[in-house]
Amino acid sequence: MIILEIILVFVMLVGAVAAGVFKDLLNAVIAAGFVSFIAAILFYFLHAPDVAMAEASIGAALTVAIFIIAIKKTKRSEEDEEGN
Amino acid sequence: MRKVISFILIVIIAVGAFSSLREIPFGATKSRVREYYLDNGIKQTGATNIVTSVVVNYRGFDTLGEVTVLFLASIGLSAVLYRKKEERRKKRRESSLILYTGCRFLFPLILLFGSYIFIHGHLTPGGGFQGGAIIASGFLLTMLGCWGWEGINRNRFKITESLSGLAFVVVGLLGLLYGGYFLFNYLPKGIPNQLFSAGIIPLVYIAIGFKVGSEIAGIINDMVRSG
Image 1 (spheres, helix red, strand yellow):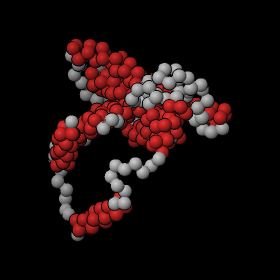
Image 2: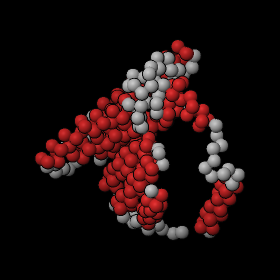
Image 3: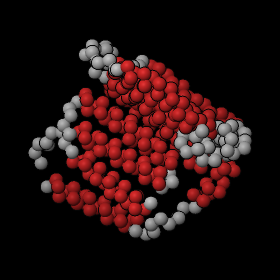
C-alpha cells in the first residue's frame, strides 16, 4: 500500500509540473484536475474520506468545469510574456 | 534583477518556515484538543462523525464565516458578470437523444445522492459542503447535456441561497435564545448512530447543503450565461 502511495505522489508531482509548463491552457486545466483527483485518492488512503469527497467533487469536477467555461470564452493558449 | 529579488524572498520564506517548524517533531501529537474531541465528541454532540461534530458544533461559528465567504464570492461573480440585456448568441447544436435521455435520467439520481450525503452528515463521511458540491455537479451535467447552455433563471438560485443561509442563522440564534450562546445544541441528542440524533447538526447541515449547492450551481450558471 505504501508503494502505491509513493507512486501516486510522484504521478501527482508530474501532473503539477505539467499544469505549470503547458502552453495550451486546456491541457493545463486538465492536468490540474488530475492533480486534484490523485489528491482525493491520497486523502482517502490517509483516512480522511470527508476531505476526499470535497476534493474530488470540487477540485476535480467543478473547478475544471469553471476553468473550461472561462477558457472557452477567452483564449485557449498562453502567450509569451513581454520583457523581463 | 527581478529574478534575484524573488530568489532572495524564497530563501527568506524557506529559512523562516524551517526555523519555526524545526522544533516540532514530525507527526508528534502536540495538541491535546484532538484527544478531547475523540473522547467527548459523541457524548457531547451525539454525532458519530467526529469531523461533523467539530465543523458544525464545536467550530460552528467558523463554518458560518466559511459559508459567508462562499456567498460573497458568488454574489461578486454575479455582479461582475451581470448583463441587463441578453444578447443573441449563436444557435447551439441540439444534444442527441442518447445524451438527452441519459442526462435526464442521471440528474435526479445525482440530486438524491447529494441529499443523502448532507442529510447523513452526522453519521457517515461527508456533509453539507460535499453534498452541495455533488448537487452542483448535477446542475453542471444538465447545463452540458439537456437544458443546453442557455442556463436557468438565476433568481431561483439566489432565493434558495438566501433562504438556506437565513435558516442557518435562525437555528443558531435560537440556540442563543435557549442556551445562552450561538449555535447551542438545544434539540435532544437522541441515540447515536440513528438518523434523528445529534440535535441541530442535521438541520444546520441541510441548510449548508442547500446553500453550497445553490451557490456553486449559481456560479456555474452565471459563467454559462455570460456572453
